[in-house]
Image (tube, rainbow, N blue to C red; front, side):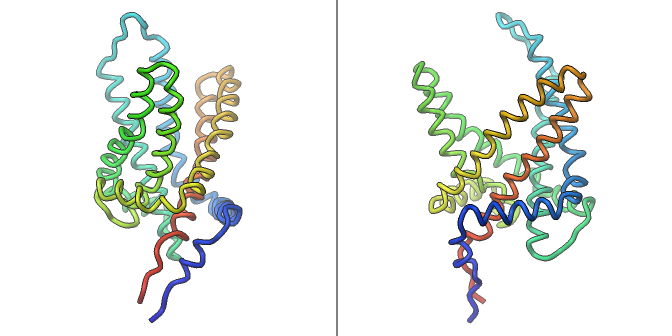
Length: 246
């Protein structure tokens, strides 16, 4: 009877997780770029267009038409395809395979519907506390803390759907249960989004002066760099899974 060494690996320090994630990201930079950049360009383009449209909205009489709803749906769909493709690529590479970008995209499509549903359900659960506490004025900060905590507990939903092949609701329950022992490490990794967001916002502001194409390119590059957090979370997920018996 052989027991995999995942149990021992799960004791890896956060610095070791980040180091391995960095090495993976650097060594597979070209493959990740080929796989994700087209999707990121579409995603960022839609986000920028929606941002421009929101800036034109009359606050006293906001109106949203069919184009805005279609754009939102396309944004969710593109994001789901992106997450499915990245997660599947990480899984296949962890198994020693070297798939092409086209093969990964094609194989990731069946995961898009469950990921979309899981994203909607988990997103509503995460946003609920901050929206609820916002109704009580200054208590919105408490809601924000609770929402971020829920975000850390549901950070593995995508992996559960793609790697574990769970249904959306099973993935949400599985992520909440799985993340308990590693919640502090998960929060630490998710906090990486903060400096990336600050830097990205500053660069986006400067790039906006160069016009829409320049801003779109800069935002896309920053979104690509942000995928490092996904890689780090996946590494933490892999080393924290329960040891299997053969």
